[in-house]
Amino acid sequence: MAKLPDFEALAIFAKVVELRSFAAAAGELALSKATVSKAVSRLEERLGARLFNRTSRRLALTDAGQKLSARAQRLLADGEAVENEALAQSVSPRGLVRLAVPMTFGVKAVAPILPQFLKAYPDVSIDLHLSDAMVDLIGEGFDAALRIARLPDSSLIARRLCAVPRHTVAAPSYLKRYGRPTHPMHLAQHKCFGYAYLSTADVWHYSNAKDEQVSVRPAGPLRVNNGEALLPAIIAGLGIADLPDFIAGETIRSGEVEAILDGWSQPEGAVHLITPPGGPRPARVEALGDFLAAHFGSANRLKTARRASR
Image (cartoon, rainbow, N blue to C red; front, side, top):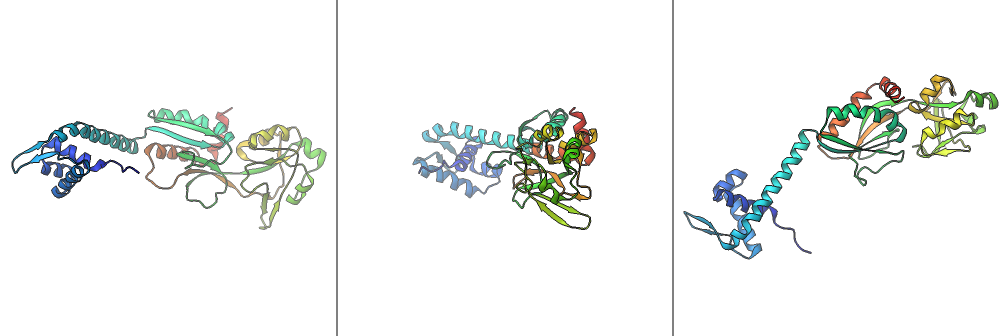
């Protein structure tokens, strides 16, 4: 297997050529003169050719050194340009952010506020990926993701943005026809709709003020991979669903559906900003994270975003 080029030695050689002095190159690179000399000697040994003719008073390029110097100097300039660009991006927000967001939350709550962010950061662009499936941030090359759940232990870095209440809901017509469940265990006798990406694998967990814990595995005629797709069937009076407030909240307030199981609640989820481990993160990712945290920092923000989407 071929070895990589000795980029360090080539860069040091280019700097010596530029300054016509081993000592001057050592001073500019903050290296010892011995280190600079060893790097050039290492390069000469690797190439099998002398690059400089050196005397106590004069430093001159050989024919091999002349042929190599232009390319080595271009390599050094390109390396400095790449590094400077990366440093600029880490200090000033610019470049592309790949962001993964659950479908309905992305459409209702995130998309309406992106124009504000893009106006504030004109050098940043966003690739918004909308899907309820849990993406592999590192494997799929995402800079960040929003997840709405109780998060398992993970090496990923999570920043909590806001709470997301959940509601177990049914239409008045369903309740009139089949009766109103008053205990989670009653759900076993009802038609309940499922959500494919539920973090607890089709199990609904409830608790009450007495700290009683109940887990049920309801069943019914419809299962979806996007929570909003359940609303037509719920409103039509065909079953019961457990949905987050950003999906069910408006229909509860309009009276199209009702929250049931008074006195019982499911563990409250939250919106989290997830980023890969390691750091520091690019300024563009930090800027977007701070923007989302400021916007969703209170429960009222979710209602504002829903109203803005209508």
